Length: 201
Length: 225
Image 1 (spheres, rainbow over the protein chains, first blue to last red):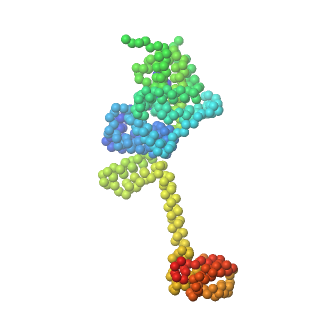
Image 2 (cartoon, rainbow over the protein chains, first blue to last red; image 1 turned 60 degrees about the horizontal axis):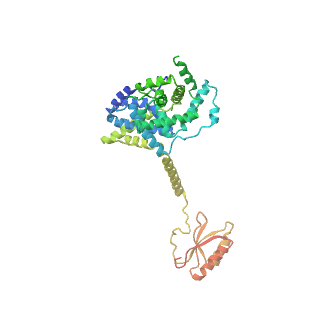
């Protein structure tokens, strides 16, 4: 099992809160609203490239959650359902406002200016560089990466959120990895060594 | 009969599954196969390190510092207003909440800015209209001047003396009937007995005179023109 810490799976808590929302419980709604706010806002920001628009769309998403909570059948996780609404509303809002995250090529110079590994400045610059590398991806590939590594969704959940076959998600993930590997060739080299050292002799 | 999976096939399968192994969502029944392959494959081990670091960097990227409390207040205000509308108990406060929720949307802001600009222009124009002096242009409706004599508007040169003006008017058989306006415009009635064919010559003479800056006929003898 990997040591990466994906966002906690709060499925049962979310379901309890949503059941409260379905019967008009404002306190449950507020708790759900606050719990989803940071990650959905960030996801919407990556889709719309506007913090203001992300916040506006988030309120629209949660308005749908308030209205449709009683329709939730429980066939998927609450987070998958909410992210599906967020994805559709975010795409629509971005198209309407003509706002998408710009795809910019990364320059060799940017990679070359990274500081010494291990320093705080290096970590900050590396994070910034990874953000730029993500921005080079086509939107659909970037969305799959965000949903998998920021939101911690499975392949099947992502297929449900973006409303496409599982194999399409796998293909997008494959191409996204290939592109990111090309611009971040040394990322994770230290972790790889650690994995090898852990192997039984 | 189960076909034996080749090493290459196992590698390709693991390579694909690593993406989901790295984020902890790979089904349990597939994990053991991945882990067994990782133990003997440097390329996959390296790829796992890459994916884990990628996930770590993405999760640690800067959070959006937005307040959920303010957003929640706005949303509940909107919900209250809509529910009140549905129950037929909408009051002015509810209407205000709906309008605020809609008008504060970024998509509306350019239109609101344009509307505000238009209002400023209209108010400015209105203010100017109020303070505008009530002088008449050549095409303005004129207070009726009795008789059918030709009428001209004249503006005299600033340096023209009263004697010069009087001499000019006397020589043309003209008489001032109104003015000067705030802008120095005189309304002058020409000799009613003058023949219409002489009118153009009279106007030309007025325009050429050094004491006259402007002369324009506004009513011919027959009241037509």
